[in-house]
Image (cartoon, rainbow, N blue to C red; front, side):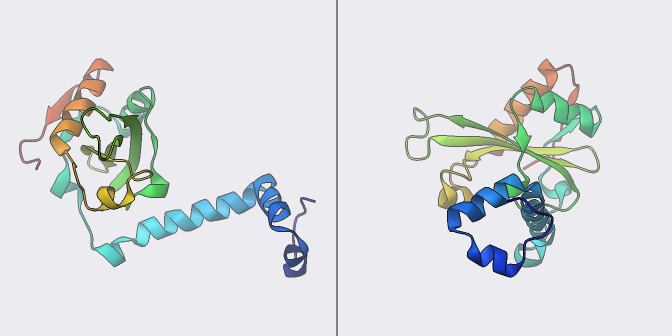
Length: 170
């Protein structure tokens, strides 16, 4: 039933399963959802205040943003645009999920989160998964910038990227 246009009446006449199937067949719907989320992220600072990259950057890779993204993608990082606020100056947002019940029995689903900024610096931190532990993630329980920074530094250096550790990083 994929059509160029569906009227409000067409949509009302569809059963919920048919409506979902229609949406999944027509990637225009999914693109609209993605666009809406991206717009929301871009304006989230209106609700939560602005955090600038200068305030949290921990590493300064001596490579282009594209090279850093590719190096991280090769190690399992994916775009995180759907589940993350957009910080001032942010140009890329990546995450890699892992499971660690031995160290974090209360919040074993974890993520290594990286934000890259327009000035070439980045923030890296390890924290509870935003998907599996929403409250602890938002409250930054067991959030650790030092662990995330060390892990991402190693990944980038293993990929041949020189990395400067920013002394002012908190």
